[in-house]
Length: 117
Image (cartoon, rainbow, N blue to C red; front, side, top):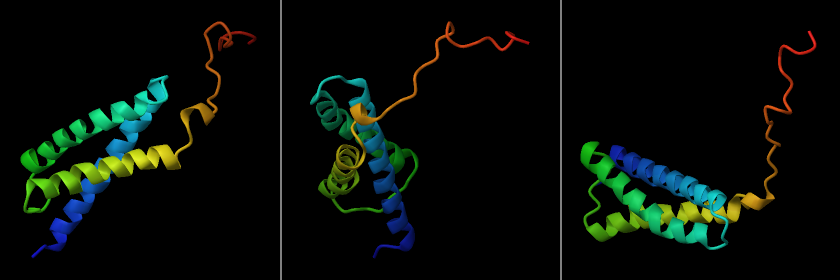
C-alpha cells in the first residue's frame, strides 16, 4: 500500500528530474551551434545526470517509494522525466535563435558614472 508521503515523494522526484532535464536540454541547445548536437547531448547526458540524482535522492536522502523493480525505477524516475523535459524544451519553449537578447554593453560604450557631473 502506498502512503500519501510516498506518493508526494515520487511526484517530487519526477517533477525535479523533469526540470533538470529541461534545463540541461536548454543549456545544450543554447551552447551548441549544430542542429542535432543539443538533442544528442541531451539524449546521452541527461539520463546520466538523472541516474546520479536518483542515487543521491534514494541513497543519501531516503526519498521515494519502493517501486518494486529496477525497470520501474528506470522508467518512472529516469525515462519519463527525460522525455518530458526534452519535449518541454523542444516543443514548448521558443528556439534559442528566435529569442532576442539585449545588446551587451562594452566598457567603451558605457558612460562612466563620473562623467558629466
